[in-house]
Amino acid sequence: MKKKKKKVNAAILIIGNEILSGRTKDQNVNFICKWLNSNCGISVNEVRIIPDVEKTIVINVRNLSKKFNYVFTTGGIGPTHDDITAQSIAKAFNLKYNFHKEAYKILENYYGKKKFNDGRKKMAKMPNGSKLIYNPSSAAPGFKTRNVLSLPGVPSILKSMIENCKKYLIKGSKVHSRTINLFTVESNISKKLGVIQKKYKKNVDIGSYPFFRLGKIGVSIVTRSTSKIKLKQVEREILKVVKLKKIKILKI
Image 1 (cartoon, rainbow, N blue to C red):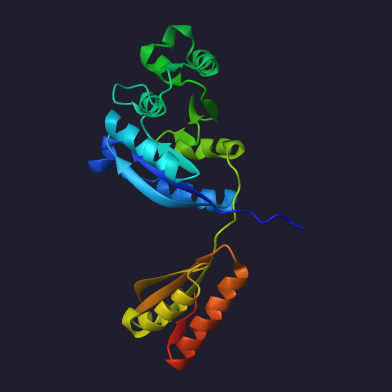
Image 2 (tube, rainbow, N blue to C red):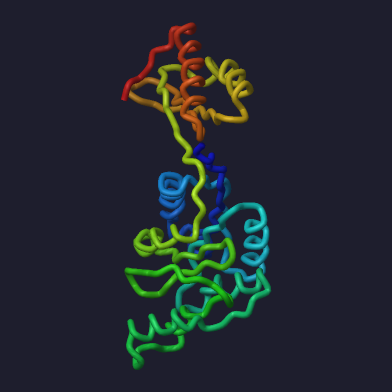
């Protein structure tokens, strides 16, 4: 008998004053969420954006690491004075903050001894006992400390590294989704959707999202579940409501 996969969840902690100020637009959350679900069956249940403040990072890392199976941090692992993610995570877990021998060697070989300055050496420091997440783009590795995986904030570099996170992750049940696009207003179907959601609340999430297309107002009904069978059951019930109310379906 095939062993049933359990639900595995994660949180994303975006660290950076540049995100909070609006100077830089985050491009990582959407990518990480999709990658985790499609490749690992891991659902992201919470996202937080916080500043480059040690106390704030420590509090959030402690909180999220207890609450979720995995925490992904982005940003703050570079060579500058305000890159304090590594030292903050060390403090969060009461670990020493030291040079990682392998990381040091990788960076020294990449830059050469003459150009391997203090700022670049800083990228080889991380919480004691951390495991490396290799970086094929710019050498500077990310790291895994307990259930926290720390990646850079630069989207192109993060994307090149994320496959190297796989070996540290336990796979869960993939979340499947189905969408029904209707030419109607939310208030016309909200009551019936609420009844269906209550009936399947343990297995299926139902979302309602308005849109404006072809000069008409509509609503997309999105259902999500780890069970394809339950999704089909919910879809049948929704379509019964659609037929009863004579609502036109938009096929895309």
